[in-house]
Amino acid sequence: MSSSIVIALPKLEDAKKIRAILERHGFSVASVCNNASNALVAVSQVDGGLLICSARLTDMNYVEMREYLPPGFELLILASERVLSEIPSSFLTLKMPMRASDLINTVDMVLSQLDRRRRKEKKKPKARTWKEQNYISNAKMLLMQRNHLSEEEAYRYIQKCSMDSGTNMVETAQMVLMLLYDEV
Image 1: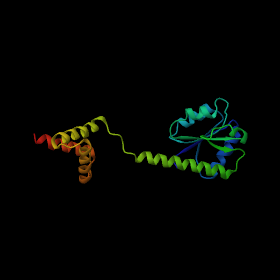
Image 2 (image 1 turned 135 degrees about the vertical axis):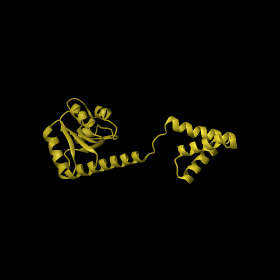
Image 3 (image 1 turned 45 degrees about the vertical axis):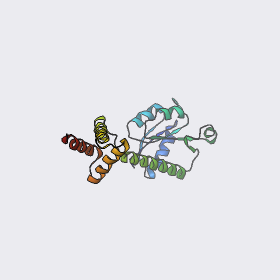
Image 4 (image 1 turned 90 degrees about the horizontal axis):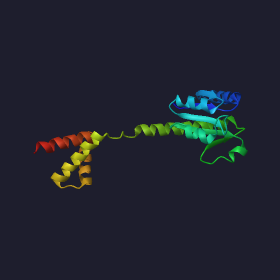
């Protein structure tokens, strides 16, 4: 998996124990620290992943931590049952003390969700530039004027021609413009 794991707990020994458990199960831990500022520095140096931390670190609490996390990062809070009862359900939590299997399953689930989300984002088509959008708009306008089509019909015409010819809509709009201007 391409996601990174950062662990931030007040006791560095506890963070190292969690790192050892995760690494034993095939996860890669990018950084281990005992305060929020170091965790945020570590998080900013990787593309995305999971920050495992306690509800309260020496310099920040879990609400502030989530606020400062960059996009592509999830927060997993480890805390006692008493502390967890005060944390809103919108936060991902794990009760301490915990079983290693609970930690492994939770981390695996979160990283899988992040990877699915990242793959889905990559599949999204890129937004058209102003220039590309302008070609399509001009071609629609010309089709509307010359062929007395509605805006939706003109758009559908360009879309269908694009699909039939195997070119993208911008190239098709450019071809429509060239053909219609050549008739003048």
